[in-house]
Each structure stands twice: as structure tokens, then as C-alpha cells.
Length: 604
Image (cartoon, rainbow, N blue to C red; front, top):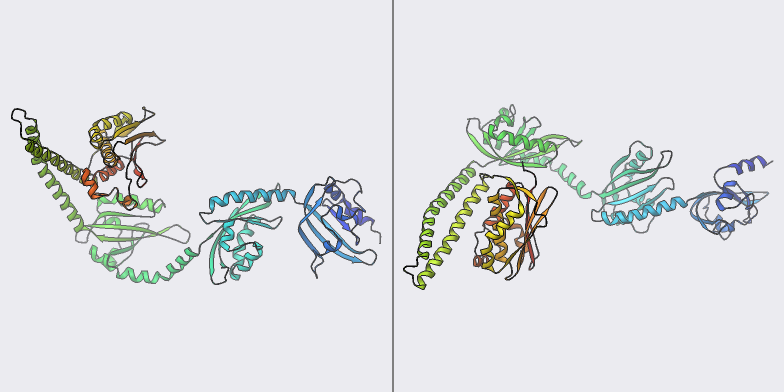
């Protein structure tokens, strides 16, 4: 048989090819092979293959083929070019024997230098990303469909409890047989260019084979070649076992919910998106004095007091838009007999299988009596405070007048008693003012007159006004305001009240002889004012209560320094009701900083 036409076609093929004889000599190779190794003409023919490939013998080459197969794919072979430089290769090798030449091997060679460099870069990129996503417990992986290789992050291995195993094989062995097709579906969708990204959820067996864990994989196309074919997929995997367990438990609890709904002691209802009642439990029917049939023919808008409807509808719109997970609201309802009832409404949303709003679950608690008692309490506090304020003002005035009389000086004991009376009267007067302010802020009845002011000037006024407190506790004020042109919207009177509370509080608990630092810092949307002192700091156990009314960290120490326990609570209400935010940072037995913000633009 004349081999000349076959050899001619062999030499013209674009992919590097060579045929190796039984003695390891190169019998044939094409131009692409010559070019790959840097040779010209037929220089390679007749040379031992061991001069261009990292193999010691034909037997070593043939050992890659496992019987009964006649071919093999070698992914990790290397060769040398004419200059002695290493070339990473992927080799598809086929073996055969004939009576004339004996055992021969045909090698299809592919230079994978670019692929290995891309894999190295991808691995480096994954290593950098690994540190960022480790805390989130997200396993990242990359799949190269051309080379059929996978690179995975450390978190991916940890999630699947894999060490140095072949990850593809180990993963397939552990995926639940019923879920393997589902788990591979996103890869197929992306490789066939059906979609840019796809996801799935599947079960995988734990390393000790004791339980099944749920995984979620999100896969997207990361790279294409010049022809638009997908050459790289990237994916993220998370353990959703806990979520799936919760879902299963939720499904099991549906019947229990139905039973609880009907027997609940508080009013409950299922409400449609249009506000119509879809279901109502007996407690709600009794609360509103309607039968279930009557409620199912009406909507919550009809039963809501007109003055409270807009607030409810606005929050409902936010809930439907997904901007809030739920809401709670005190509102008035109109009973069947026309009477008004105050109810505490709690609303949550139920979504359909596509994640769209489907219906609402409402819970209503009768708080009519609670509201009445709160109103009585406010009236009582206001009355008592006002009744105390008038005589107290007279007493303080009288004591001040007596103290200023020089014509008939009092004895030292009398002067001491008058001083004690004045100081206690001032403390009582401050307490009454704080109680009245607290009630007004709590009821949101305080009116603010907001206008634009230079913050630096207001800070200086506050420091000057509280100089006596600084002297009393042996501290000094230091103002740091690099930009004196900063302006914000404040109520000057209430701003001074905020600063006074923070400065006197800082002075009380600062180390004697230390400095109180007042810092003003401009930010894009607001101005940050901070007051810092060096002292005992705030204990961890007290941090959550710092802004609560009538709460003090160390009663004995606080009383020694004075205080009503309302200052920080009032300060928080002023700041938030004028469009700002407030907070603090403290190191126990160290530096404590209270800060608040002033809006640059007029708050709504």
C-alpha cells in the first residue's frame, strides 16, 4: 500500500502530530510539530523522541495506556524546544502494532502554556478572593471546559470536607444519585449558552457518610474565546442545610399554624393585597364585634380610623416594595357598634413561589386600656411637675435673695444650710425640666425651629456656657474645628441642650485634670460632632442601656456627681427628631467618645 498520500495529508495538518517507532525514533511529524519544538524542514525525523519529550523510554510512554484501551490523554507532559526551554504539553496518544514496523505510537500534541498561565492567574485570583469570602463561608470554584479542569478555593474544600482528592471524582461520588443531573444542569445551561448564569440546589453526603447536606451552587460565564465559545465558568457554593431544614420544619408546621390561628388569644387575620380580609380568627371577630362572614365582606381600610389610615397605607406600600420586612403600628379601629378601639397592629408579608407579594398576616392586640393609662400617666406627670415648678421657683428665688443680703450676714451654719437648699433646689428644678422635656419628646409634641447655622460658633457658645461644670470637676475643654465655615440645620436652643448634656456628662466621668476634646468634622451629608473624655469608660453590661431613661451606670458614683438619668435619653430624642444620628464608642477603663450628626440639608 502506498503511504505517500497519507503522509502528505499528515504533514499538512495544523495540529502538531508525530509517529514514534518501536525504538523511540520519530518516524513522521508535521510542520506544526517542527514549529512547536523550533526545528525546520525534516530535522526532527529520525531523532529519538526523548530529545523533545520528557520520557525515558517507549515503555514509559506506553505505560500511560491502560489495557484494554489503545489510547490515553496525558495532561502533565513536558517537552523541550531546540533552545532547551520547557514546553508544557497535553498529549493524546494512540498505540498500534503492525507486522512490518511493530509497536508504534501516534501523538497529538497541544501547547498548554497559555492555559497553564491562565490557570495560574486564576488560582492566584482565587487565593486573593478566598481571604475575603472565607468569613462568608462561600466556596468558589472555576471550571475550564476546554481542558476539563477545576480549580477550587479552600472554603470549597472545607464545605465538602475534601483534602487532596481529585475534586471532580470525589464530588460526583458524594452527590446524591437523584440529584446529580440537577447539580450538573447549571453547567450545561451555561456551556450551551442558554443563559449567562444558572443555579441549583442539591444534596451531598458528608465525609463520614452519616448524613446528607444541602448545597446551593450559582454558576456564571466568566470568559469566552474570540468565537464567543465559553472557555471559563465560575461558581459559588454555599451550605444551605440549615435553610432547608427550616423550610422542611416550616412545611411540617403549616397544620400547627392553622390550629394556632384559630385558637389564638389575640386577633389574627389573613389579608389580601387589596386590603380585603381573607381569613379572620374568632379572637379578631370578638375584638371588632363582627362575625367572620361580615369581616370577609369588608377590608381593613373601612375599619381603620380615617386619621390613622395614611400611615398604615404608607407602611404597607413599603412592605410590598420589599423595603421593610414587616411593621408594627398603633392605630384606631372602628368597631361594629361605632366605638373606637386602639390596637397594636403587627403586619408580615407572605410571598408566592416566585417571590412576589401574595398576602399579609396581621395580628391585632387591644391596647385601648394601655393607651388610656399612658395618657393618665402623662397628665399626672405634667400636672405634678407644673405644680412643683411654681413653688420651687419661689423657694429658689427666696434662697438666692437671702444669700445675697449683706446688711445682716447670716451665721456660717445658716449660710451652709441655704447653700445646700439652693443646690438641692437646682437639682430638683433640673429633674422637673428633664421630666417635662422627656414626656414631650416621647409624645413627639416638641416643636423645633430648624435653620442653618455655623456649627463652630454654637460649639464655642456651649463650651463657654458649661465652663462652670468643667471647673467644678477639674477638667478643660479643647475644641478642634478645622473648617469654621461648616453649616447645618439645627434648632439652636435644642443644640445647646444636646451639647450641655454631653459636655456635663463627659466632665462628670472624666479623670480630674484631663482634657475634654470637642471635634467637629465635615462629611458629605452631615456634620459629625464628637465629645471625648479619658475616664473609667462604659462597661460592656451597660452599653445597651446607655440611652434608656432613668438608667444610670453606677448609682453610687453617679449620685456623688449628680444627675437625673434622663440627659442622654433626651439628647438621643433631640438628635433623631431633628434629622441626625447619635452613638458612642468606649473602651472600658479608657477613652469614651459620644458623637452625633447634624444634617447639612434641611431634613424632611
